[in-house]
Length: 350
Image (cartoon, rainbow, N blue to C red; front, side, top):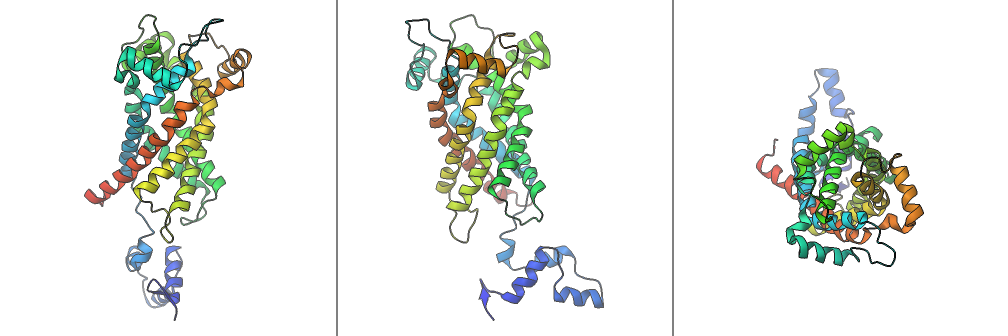
């Protein structure tokens, strides 16, 4: 009888039925003569070739590994994020004058010259504190989105289904992302401004915003964040999953080397920002504007940008975003995979 990886065709069919919850011929005999074996006994009897494709899901490990991956992303990408926000929010120059920043490199040099190297890390505390729960919720949302669309646990989802699951993760993270982005942007813009210092740090930003407008002020830009993160997260997860399938060696689907993980994560991050950059400009302008400047929210921001600067303004900061996207998201996914392997090694039963 023909064998594949040491498993006969008959055994393979029987074990496939076990995996899908069906009964084998042997189980039917047990049913007729006495109590059948438990599900745990049946699965433990499967050859290792099948057990290797049934990874144990651990929410605790996903939470910890996702948080570590998010910290890696912030540490690798925050300097260019600071440059992006300052380019997006710099005031229009007076007629005949040059803009304050001529571009990405000029912004970086002026920031380092005026504030030192760590000026590029202004406002990092807020996203760093928020990344652990945010990435935990992000991966949770993606997992729920996949499960809602699966008719069986082993069903492979299409690209459209993966996109839908990713969009759900964007909805899940908005509650954490919006205040974190608001605090970060205000601190980044303040550091570049020559005006009076309004905030002494992230906690002080929260106090001032709450005093001025309550929770509503802290969550200013929620719709803009949804507009950015829902489609962008769909692209993010869909492209990463597709790249994992494409880059994996034959017969080892989803198993990537560190280099392949870096490539898949980096490209997915760039595709994510290709979708997100326009809404991100609207969000940054809205979240850093004085109260009352944009009475209709992002609609007012959009009208003003189209009237005064044109469609190209929606791509301000695109250069630092794309330069940042690859290393930051490569670091995120690499950190996640390394953390998962480490947790599996020190706490296999966690």
